[in-house]
Amino acid sequence: MKILKTFVPALLFFLSWASCARAGRETRSDIHQCFSDSARKWNLPPGFLEAIAKQETDGFHNIPESDDEEHARVYGIMGLHSDAVFGHSLEEAAAASQRTLVELVNSPCANIDGAGALIAKRLKDNGNNLAEALTHYWSHGDEETAAAAVEQVARLLGNGSSGRGSFRSEEH
Figure 1: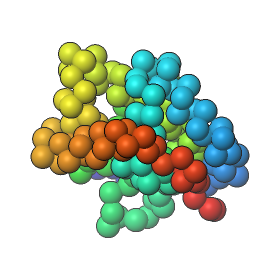
Figure 2: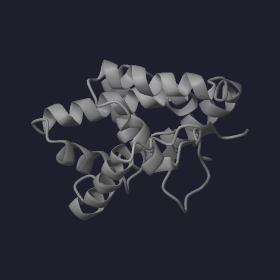
Figure 3: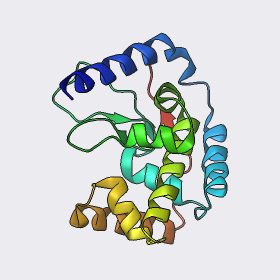
Figure 4: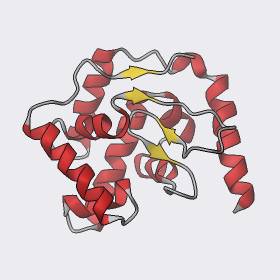
């Protein structure tokens, strides 16, 4: 497990560095279309994935540095993780969407699709209970943390606010 903890982030950093130029290719318009396409593909409510991105990363496509051992690594616009603290949603999203880790790290659209696939899987695993699915998406079972996040997403959806115009990629 210690090797995995060291190897996966180092590999992801190297691969994201090697293809860093690809990360910013998707325009805001492309990203908004990706939210819509992924929600439709995974049978999720319109605006739902945008609200999660707003909650998780404020629409920022994050590619963390591999040598940052102090902070949990949050990957992409949807806030996927690959660490011992918050779990391995990055790897789970890659498997659920049949995409590579490199795609999910470097491409906001792939990251959105991976998160959509993972949430759809969590919904299926939890009897279509959205609160339960999101509890496991955000906190791996911490109901109090997830409840606050679910409330925030509901508030964003209820206000019709999906953060349009605020989604961006990190500069390299």
